[in-house]
Image (tube, rainbow, N blue to C red):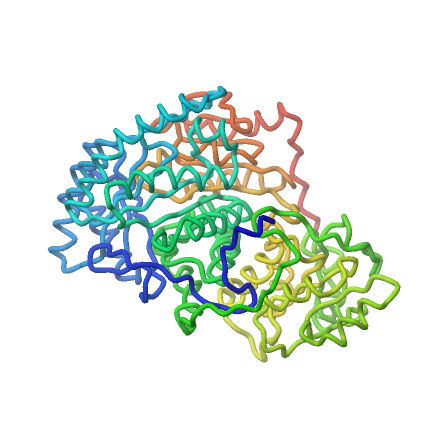
Length: 592
């Protein structure tokens, strides 16, 4: 780890990152404001009544900022009508124009809305997947061209009092950035900083940054690196941060993936506004986002503490903690073994009659029979005694600790010998009664998922969800979303927006129904080309809107089938999976 890079003043105590305030219309972001919740409408931007209805519905649901796509100047021009009708309805929620590719659309949109979002990967930059070497002179020449294209927008936003989000997406880094920095968090950060420097050259500072990715590990590392670089640039680079996991998907999986990425950063004091990107109607994003930010809006904004804590892991580069292998109840864990799923004895008993038929969601180890040693990581005598043991021992944080879950396990991992494998728990104070599933899901995903993304953890135990079967499903789905243990088909699915060229919700469900049995296969479902090929970097196959009612199919980042009629596209996707040897027939349902 580079000691000059720090993103959090104290990894063991919560303190929200101090930023300047940026005003988006009448809503303040950063500074002493609460963490704001936003979303994006899905209607065609040319359809004024539909857009206005969606904006009003989101505002009614508690959304504080609403984004609208403006893919061309024609679309952007209609923002005048949308804004007028929204204000006429008595709604003061600020509007944001989402810009990709078209500087003239941004210049038009800035006349009518309170904020412009630009993606530096495709705003006046090239994305043709060209592989070439840029000399320093060629690189600077490209930057000058971007400066010429971007400066008019900076000046217009400054004159009109508009805010701007410089929003890098992992899936749409430009060829110039890709060829110099690769498909990396560093490339994402450099892409944003280049645009920020241009803005600052014109004394424009109404900036907000984001570093979105569909992979929570990449997303977390990118945001941490961004904040560290902003700190290194100087105290006046204290711009607010917008958080989001892009293409999180739908249902439980989308909520878990969002909670891992967004929740992990919020727990470290990073984030001033969030958007949960679900492949569902946008109003369903708001309760999830509000639940994620609520605990941190309640936290006191303390001055940054300092415990001089050095983590056992590199916050900017993933590597699994190197524990030793032990065998418990016939299951090997630790070392290079898969991360195991624990349950309690009473839950095991409740499920005993059907464990054999539970498939991939079955419990593996009973906590009370595992011999796990529970210690307080602040108890130096207990740590010394553990480290003196000749054999590796499974260890966890004892219940009742006065520390939060993430800091407690960070401290444990740093103090006990690496050879001792660690059992992660979602809570150190098990609930005494049943609670709402979302109330259990979000902190469990945040706490366990965050630690897994830092390489900590050899087994997991979910206790916040008291229903035995649901707690196991939640544990496995957290492992899947963190990329730790892939046991089912993995989907990367973007949320709908005005650029989408087909019905994402129904199509995603159709693809799930056809391919959900393909264990370990990763399929990306993208409404348009904006983030498609890039966000499919880790996907085996991609289903991408190429034109209205026409689908392009990808293998990895490469388009291989073009302009397929939508009604044929799912079958053609199955054919493509067959061609590449990754298709198996779905198992027949068991006879009753």
